[in-house]
Image (cartoon, rainbow, N blue to C red; front, top):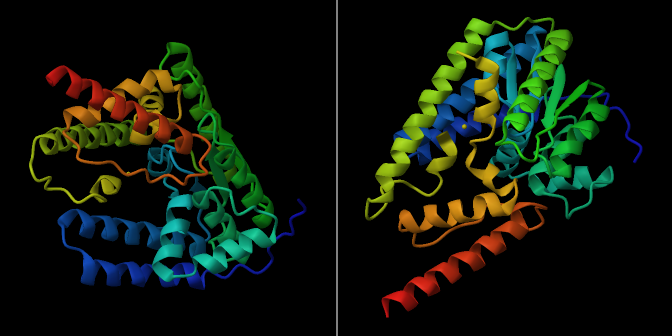
Length: 314
């Protein structure tokens, strides 16, 4: 694949997405969580544009990168697969975005979450970052490689965090700490900003508190009938600081799909049964190399467990 450098970067389309989010907030938000989500995302996008126009560092990243690092280093940052996918949907330009990705050789069966940001870069609509950070997520070659394409299109440096497969071991945790250290060193070099470890400790403390609240909410809704939370609400929740970041990196709910199935399969099934779930939705693209296949296994195991439970009752 031979990529040409994008010479004309026009952020008009990106900036138009910000007032559209405000309109969605004002006319369609029905819960406080939705309103807070829009307000925070609008604030984040405005910070990105302010940094770009003011000549300050701006870094963009793939899912799961610990963004506490941005706050501790006083740099603007945003997740590219999140914002590109959301804006493509809100602005109704997904066909144009995917066509742009296809025009530079990105095959249509590639995960749409990773094709969307490539399309935005190919169109020259994405704000130019100082650097791009992506992760391997241990199996996803889409996540591991898409940043290289975008970096080539915009001629900016790229850093990839490698996620160890057996991450729950001490060796895996130590490995992740070293990866985060390397990422910080990369960002210090490319942005000129130094890490403030006191601010990083505070950021990880707040993240830990957020996670504790999320668990509390989850436990409350397990027994509530009917469930008081809308189906999409779960996606609105997004002293050794580096080790804390390494541990936090692994507690994202969907990370259970990325490791060895025998480790997480029973946990996922038990969680569904204990919460009394009436159904489940797989939000991953069916072409996803990890979650598409694993979701089928989980579904089959779930029905097997339910069938065995009925047999015991009868």
